[in-house]
Length: 314
Image (cartoon, rainbow, N blue to C red; front, side):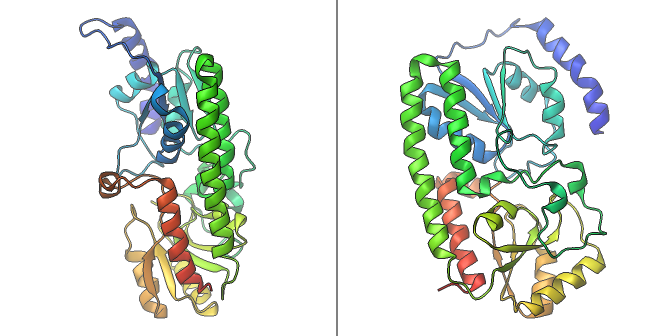
């Protein structure tokens, strides 16, 4: 299906260009039009760009971003953007294929280019089934860079610099906003460092391998039930390995995620006498979180609290 869509993309783009603005004329806007590919990038653009940007996120609330497919409306949104902010490395293949057909005047910012990323082959922690084939083989690296506040600060500055180049008259505005948000990220990093400094164990078990950057930053070891894709299914062998690791490290909590079926985590928890809790990869807001006005920093602080409970931190 993905290959079929890829073949159609040039045709769809050609049709949209030929149609141009026939019929309904686009409304004129003053803000820089920015499109993001995943919620945390939307949050950063919103924080840095403020009221000088109009930002659209391609993934609706409650949707899983890994295998996002583009609609004709999404393509039209991309074509009308001034800046597209995304994560490369095969995280969202449909988007990366579409970007090849986007006008060269549109600025495309892959925020991972300047980051020290974790190769996909190393993304699943130190104790996992190397023989098991995961969907991570399609990825160049672990895409979940936003779960490290220090990397989020780097991305904040990338977005600041790019917006400043596109819209030079508002450079000082973007610099001030970026500086203010970077301070919030510094505070978040400090809270994680303090909160995870004195724990009974450094091991945590989670549904899929989304937390490699968080683990690397705070000297933890994630034990994922599946690989980088939340849709992948664990083999019976892998399930048994995780059960044994949970017993070995006396895991009190098995973590699952907001957008993933919790039954696999619940099965392991029942087997070892642990409870389940949500550890949020913050790939997308749920409709309830969006309605409540929750944001990246608040959700990360919730993650810190459930990690402290599961790791038995003092």
